[in-house]
Image 1: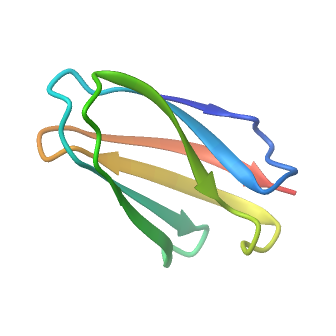
Image 2: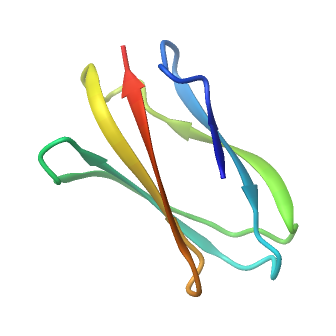
Length: 81
């Protein structure tokens, strides 16, 4: 998974995801204290894609985005300015 831009200054965080089985993915964002601040399910019918996650309402700070497709979980850190 790639995330960009990092740090995020705009409205959206872009996720570049490879999902070999083209299945639904849960996207969750956690703040630095471990609280879940965002959740969305992406129904993907493609094995590779770029997805936009709205982060405009998040306060400035450090976050972790977690993507889970039911078989694999990937975590990446990002900064919201």
